Length: 288
Length: 328
Image (cartoon, rainbow over all chains, first blue to last red; front, side, top):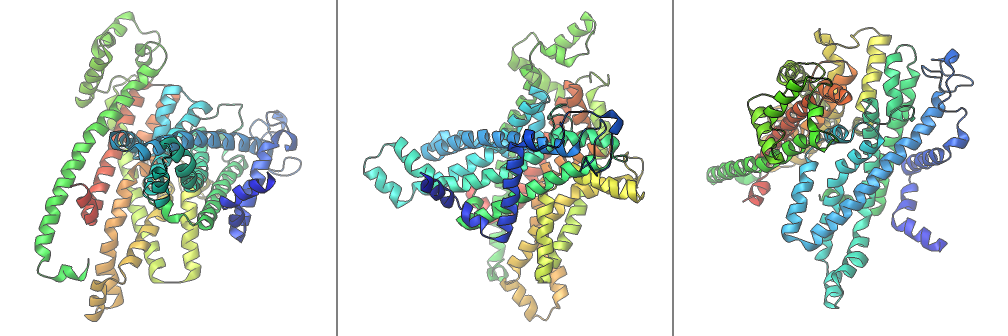
């Protein structure tokens, strides 16, 4: 069982991606970030919501390593809990997007014809629109909050996964081993699930990982506009939004959450690049 | 761009090409019809998907029953949805975007007031990213220095990963708070444009630099360049007179296709720097749930994206005969 888990990791190129120095640094950063997000309630030095009005806008130092905000809340604790919000919102949204996108893309690529054209027309419609505009439409309908942020991210990146999966399926359908399976009398469902999808999954997973990075930026941006996470939920974007009023007094309230967002997205991109190299799928990712 | 273009048959080929391009443009314009209908339906449906009577979303709380009656008649809110859509679209075409709930003015006035600011900012950001990006891209393609190449690569990575609003805040901290050179916000002076343009341009520079670099490296070994060298032209003459104009088309194309991204950047920059513009109008309206304004400004932004994509697609087709062929 254990050997199989390692085998799966290896097939996804995780091990090889970690073997370069850039991969090790970026991948290590992401592992630590995820660990921090998971253990947030136990490792934060202070209660993220505890207000100390006598100690507001304190500069970084001891005991508040990254300073405090306008209500005297500990910035470090809020950044740590913000990791929870940002990562879970973005990852859940991309998870939905990948599931729906892969289903649509696989069906479109496999069935073809009018169905394929209809799906791709709708999907291309969202593709041509900037993610922020799509997100704002959702906010207008559902109202500000994390739910609409999640839906917005899911819709914004749906086109990418649909197109990518479809391209993989169309390419694989012509391969000899699939033809052989068809001739052996395999049912379409069996071919799709056992043969086509497993061979199509690697580029989708890498694209999903990169999209989680973009999702984090989108979540932070909506939060910054005051349309994402609502107080008192700690979120990187929302922290910076309330920090703008104190830009002159307490710049650290803005600098640190933004720095973590930037570092996270850079790490996601660098590690994604290493994965692409390890799996040798650059061409397959480009062909959409 | 092959050696054939110097031959006598080139003229007929070019003519065929432009004929096909015309047909492609026409087809592309036809495709705009279903796209714009779908988008306008989505924007129209915003008020109807919300819980409650759509009229509550279109009028101030506590308006007189007569005012509600007038609005209901104007939009035909008692008629079927499809009729309402056509009435709404008809009003839009006549430039009647309805009445803003919070600001109590016609939405079209608000849009006309904010549009020039957005156009100035977007245009300047467009020009800024093209000029700086092409310069960087050219340097990295001509001077083949590994350290420089790393620098450009790093810049491209930063340009696509650093959140725009955070960059804007850092720029304010540096140039307005610490150095005191530039105003924090507003739109009264030209100097107030510097930081917003930098903010939007940052991601664009990276993109343009990459496209320019690839375009220059791709054509460097083409036959016509060898011919130019053989003619005895200096390297700089070849670069400025022949290679760079060649790279200009892909750069303009990619920027036109990414117009949505410039608009997205403009939304952020307008919001952070407190500038008037379509973006800040939209964000404020979303916060206040002022639906006529949301619908109007979204429609304008969507229109801009569609036009940008249209121009980008046509330019791309003009460059790449394969696209023209495929659309036949």
